[in-house]
Length: 259
Ligand code: SF4
Ligand code: SF4
Image (cartoon, rainbow, N blue to C red; front, side, top):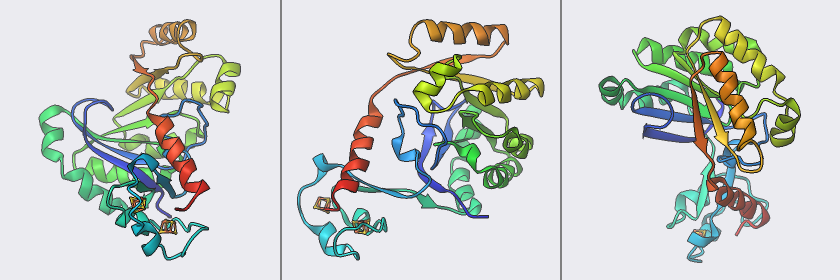
C-alpha cells in the first residue's frame, strides 16, 4: 500500500470536531470547488508554492537547487533552505506509525477535552485502505476518530473505515444536482446517497456547509437546513473566507517561475 501525501498537520485545533484535536490533511480531491480554502490539497502530488511577498531576494534557493534551474523537480530543497519561508513544499509521505507518533503526542489534551483526531483533506476518503489502518491504530490507542469528507466516493470506501470512525463531518454544499455540478465539478447524487446509507446504519454525523456568496448563500442554505431538520442531522454553517486565494496564487507563481 502506497502512503498518500499529507499537506498539513494541525495540532490543538478546536474547529474540526469536538474538543481539542489533531487534524491530518490528506492531499488529493476528486471535486473542484471554485471557492476551495485549501487549493494545495486538490492535487494528489507534491507541489511547490512561492509566496513572492515574503521573498527577500537572497538567492539561496538558486544556489541549492539540484535542478540548476527549471524545470522544477519538486524536491523541496529550496523550501528547506529559504530563510523567510517564501518557498513551501506541500506534500509529505508518512507511514501510519509515524502519523501515530504525532497523533499520540496530544493524548492528554484529547482525554481532558473529549477530543481526538480528525482526518481531512483534500479528500481523505480517497485512501480507504491507508485510512482504515491508521484509524484502527487510533482506536486501539483509545483515540476518538472523526472523518471530514465531501462523501463523493463509493460506499465501499465508507465500509472499509466504518468500524474505526466515531464521527463523520459530512459536507453538503448544496442540494440541487445542477448547481452542485456547476460549483464543484460533480453532481451530488452519490454524496446524498452515501449520506442516507450512513444514517441508515445509525452513524454519528455532523453536516457542515460552507456558506459561499454567489453559490449557496441564502435560499440554498435554507433548503439544506430544512433537509437536515427533517432527518434530525445537526448542521454547522462555515463562514466563507478568501484564505485559499493567496495559496492558489503561490502555487501558480511557483509553476510559472522556478526563481
Ligand atoms: S525564495 Fe529564494 S530568494 Fe526568496 S527568500 Fe527564499 S531563498 Fe531567498
Ligand atoms: S526549485 Fe524545484 S527542483 Fe529546485 S530546489 Fe526548489 S523544489 Fe527542488
